[in-house]
Structures are given as C-alpha cells and as structure tokens.
Amino acid sequence: MSLLAEVTGSIGSVGYGLAAIGPGIGVGIIFGQGVQAIARQPEAYGVIRQNMILGFALTEALALIGFVAPFVFGAS
Amino acid sequence: MSGDQILAIEPGCHLSVGDCGFPAPGSEIFFFDEIAKFTLGSTEFAVTKPMILLWIAAIVVIAFFVKVFRKAKVVPGKSQTLGEYGYFFVRDGIARDTIGKEGDRFVPLLFTFFFFVWVLNLMGIIPFAQFPVTSKFAIPVAFAAIVYLAWVPLGIKRQGLGPFFKGMTMPRDVPKLMYVLLIPIEILSNFIVRPFTHSVRLFANMFAGHMLLATFSIAAWYLWPADLISDFDALSVTGLVGSLASTVVVIALTGFEMGIQILQAYVFTLLAAVYLNDSVNAH
Image 1 (spheres, each protein chain N blue to C red):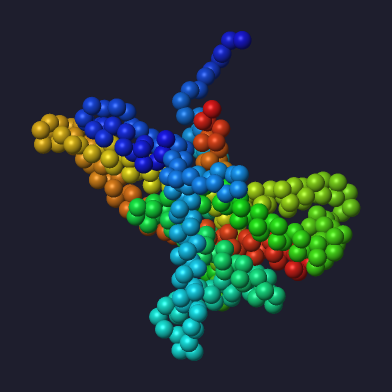
Image 2: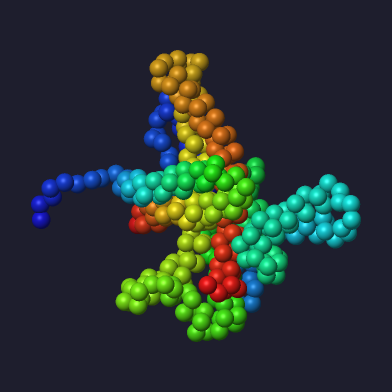
C-alpha cells in the first residue's frame, strides 16, 4: 500500500488539541451563561455558582481524558 | 525510573552548554522506586513515596479534626473556628444544598471526602512532598468505588429495586418509542460512565497539573545559561530570558494549582452528593 500522507512526532498533542475544542467552547458557554444568570439574579448566586461549577467539571472531563490518553496509549 | 532520578539525569545539560535536547517529562515521573517492603499475610507490599504521603495526609486530617473538635468549646478559639467553617461549608454548601433535608446524614462521608481529597491534592505543592497523591489512578478509583457502592445499594434500599432502576434509566415525559434509544444510553451514562468519569476527573486534573509544573520546572533548569559569563552570546541570553520566564510561570502555576486542588476536592464531593441525591430523592 502506498502512503499518501504521513504524520510523525507527537500525535498525542494533536489529539489533545482536537479534544480541547469541544470542552473549550462548552466551558466558555457555561461561565458566560453563569455570569449572565448571576447578573440577572444576584440573590441566586449560591445555587448558580454551584451548578456552574458542576457543569464546568462535567464538561472539562472530556478535555482531561484527551490530555491523559496520549500518555496511556502512547507509551507502547 | 523515579521522578527524582529523571530530574537528576545529566545535571550539566543546558541549552547553551552541551545541548542534550529538552528532557520532556513523561508519565514516568509518576512512578517511584520502592523505599521499603513489608509482608502482610502472603502479600508483599512495596512502600513508595505516594503511599507515605497517603499515610501522612490521613494522619494530618485525623489529627487536625480530633484536635479541633475533641474539646469543642461554646465560644470557639482560632482553630475551632477554622474547623467549624470547614464543617459548615460541607454541611450547608454541599450536603444540604444538594440532598436537601436528609443531607445531614451524609455529612460525615462528604466531609471526609472533601478534606482527605483536598489534603491529598495539596501534597502536589507542599515542598519536598510535591506529588499530588490523587494523580495515582488507583486512589481516585477507590474513592469513586466507595461512592458507587454507597449510592447504588442505598437507592435500591430506599426506593426498591424496580422503581430505582426505572427512575435511573427511564426519564419521564418522553414518548414511548424513545425508550428504545434512551434506556441503553441512560444505563451506560448512569451506571458505567458515571463512576469512571467521577474518578478520571480528579485523577486527570491532578495528573495534568503535576505534569505542567514538572514541564516548566525542567524548562527553567534546562534553559538556564550556566556559561553566561564565560561565553556571552545570543543563545545564553535567550536561555536566561526563557529560564526566568519559566520560573515565573512555575510560581504562577503553583498558585493556580492551589485553586484547582480545592476546586477538584469540591467537585468530587459535590458529585458524590449529587449521586447520593439520586438515591435519596426519587425523581
């Protein structure tokens, strides 16, 4: 089979870059909306902040898995 | 090879002095040589640095709160105020806000999780310890397993086997046909992915943070121009600037890590409370 294109070097970093796109947008939306919600209803700060951090943590997990995966699978 | 050894490779290696290439840290900095060995029954245990840090963290947490709360006074002193502040934070901010009226029953579990995980994370920036114990995957896995083994049986006991699994896998107000699609997804997300991400979130955050600190620390060392005076050239000056910048970044990242560490301890405890809430309050 003839190779048309080849990528060498740290492919894991490229993978992490791709994995960070979605969570990056997601975290931005979460905090943006969270700040907006607090601005609209400052008295609900506690509840909003808690849910904001929760959503942030859930979204961020994807990027972190993307960060760790190269170390796990790249070693062999 | 242990983390201490990798940094000691070629001490004379700098960008401008006998360039040996940037020794980028890999996952090997998370594996330590055994310090001692002991046998319990027929199983042999190797004592490593993370294990010792784990013991220290446990002792620190226990000792602090025993000291603070053993002879609790009506008018609290300095350390008791601190302890009470931590207790109220977990009870009001996590347990009662998330679980509701019954939250108080779970405060001991959540309180232990919060402070134990936090101290384990803090080990990452305490000088000479400098290894976040939770970046060893086995430890978050054990914590997540405790939470999983708490909320699933609790839910079955509280709601009954059928209603609990029905509540967890069949969201209400959904067209019947959608259940074909939804039930497998809900089973996957609630019973398989949930404990996995619960542990991976804590592990990966600490892993990434430690890796970041290690990378910039090594960069600061590697770029340092040891021959600045004897051999003053562009490379040395570049190295000096890069080295100083890396040092500043390490200090800034250490502060950033402090924030991440308490945030992750909070998130871990909060998620534990959210999962327990699924069992206590049927939806």
